[in-house]
Image 1 (tube, one colour):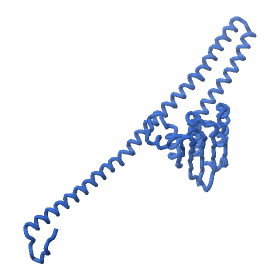
Image 2 (cartoon, rainbow, N blue to C red):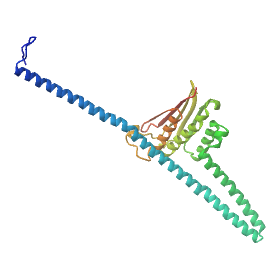
Image 3 (cartoon, rainbow, N blue to C red):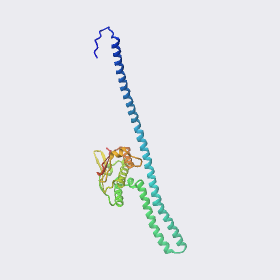
Length: 275
């Protein structure tokens, strides 16, 4: 649009002034829409940013409650099916011995007591196993390295089809006391996940200290999984082991990373500064 220059003190003609006012108004409206649009977008983004941690906290809280209930269920099953049945058999054995003694069948009573003694011994072994699952006494008495050696032996006795390659290149005195239970629980959970989901036949465990940092890695040659799928779709009851390992690592002051791909196994890395 062509306009003539307006000198100092001159007023533009009404049509020019009206056109200029309309153009300025249009520009103002566009600027307002752009600004309010950005503000709306920013407000929505801010709301999403504020809600995301709350939603994540609710999801994690639900998963933690599920983990607790599953653990209680497992302990209750162990006590009922293991110790409960053993104690029932001991009670029946004692009643049998009492009946044999009442009948003055001493040799039979002695034989029954021998069998009962073996059953009591087995029950103590079962009790020790349950206690070790809850918290290994060797962790406090002998340390994390002895506890891991015990755990590997127990695992290999129970799972003959899976080989564990161990690289524990660290001194007991180099591992802070506060980290010992975290290391054990993360390793325990990782190997439990491998047995349940990975379909692996080889596990490599490494625990080393380098440059005032403690490094724990657990690798398997199993079927792996798509990490994007797990992030985008993680229903309650799925991936709880991964969540508990990550949370335990972070709470204990460490960093956690997991690498996995379909048909390429899974690698879990946890490191703690301990200088």
